[in-house]
Amino acid sequence: MRSNDEARMTNDERMTKLEAQVPNRKHGGTRSSFEHSALFRHSSFVIRPFALAVSLLMPLAAHAQSPPSAKDILASVRMMESRQQIDLQGQLRQDNIVVPFHLVQNGPLIRYSFANPDEVLQLRLGENSSRLDLVTGGGSEQFAASKLKQKIRGTGVTYEDLAFKFLYWPTARVLGEENVRTRNCWKLQLRAPSRESQYSNVLLWIDKASGALMRMEGYDWNAQLAKRFEVVSAQKIEGRWFLKQMRIEELQPGTNHVQARTYLEIKR
Image (cartoon, rainbow, N blue to C red; front, side, top):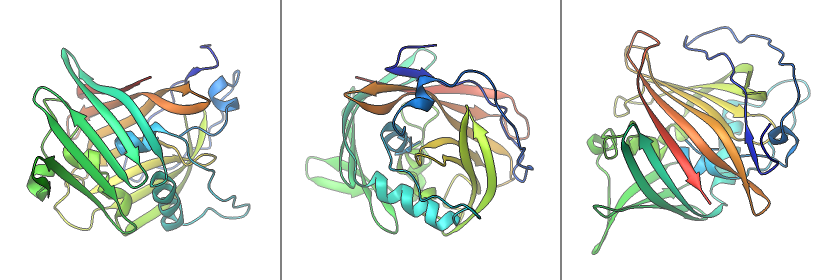
């Protein structure tokens, strides 16, 4: 068991079938300090997946008889994310590639600053959509849809992953409940509105108590699992829970073989 200022969650069986049956699985053992803490938070997957995964969310409304709708769950995640105040250092790490960045969020504006060479990205969270811009000396310009699919500096993270546009996809449904690393989550399926996205479908596991995005799986246009994001550990900074490490795995389509792993790590 780690200290009270850091919690690492135990592994949970991964679901790789797009329409898999949700198992009723109980986890035994001692509850971690993570579980006894105040509410922990993601999304985001920076992802906004980074920013979303980074900080604390208020709990979603309790539903005694039936689950909330996917629309309500996603609206709650987006609303709470747009209220965060964050100023942290982080890095993307894949094998011998290390890409430091500075993450600053002021409400609905999230800014990622990279160096060597300098690159500043600004994500604006709206009520109905998100917009990722490249900030330049003369202002800012919106990313073209074709560039969103490009990888960031040789890592497994794309600019589309940073924008987390799937949180705004209109077609979504709740598949059921499932535990991820001891946390009881809603499992959602989201369908892409067009082929502009690298993903045709996305599965999300959202912590029922906190609204934290615990896992995300992206499927290509052949319905094959292509990428998986999962929160590995959390840390407590100045009385609040933040993401410490998220693992991003790229998989060979049609198999469960991991071709590459990138880690998103947040430092104090």
